[in-house]
Image: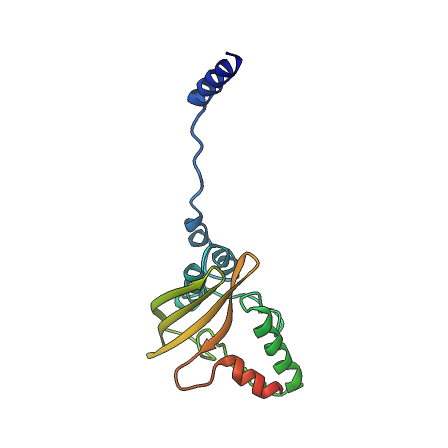
Length: 176
């Protein structure tokens, strides 16, 4: 009988309590202006949100990635790609490194940028590929971002551009 009374008491209290509203996690990245904080937040949500946040910086006039991290320490890249980028810059010793452009936009400068399409295929809980089509300065480009989940965040592990070796192969050839 005691258990029934306790259950009735809790049911009554629950009926009188105001309903809690859960925040909508998918809306969190959109609330931030394009830039590193939005990218880092989106990287915790999912691979497609992460990729869209990466390209939103280029597609939004006046948006900035802010002060870039040192080569080899960028949180948007996984550990292996960061290690290769860091080694490439160290080996260049002040000269022009192999990676002398932004691999995300496949450019040194961007302007009149539009993200035309993003198709994400997830091959497991911690691996995905994003086929991206974008237009920069009137030139339509296609590339595939290989993505991995390290800890709670999605990161770029390689960049594949049709007609070229993968970015990791280019960097490995330069640092070997």
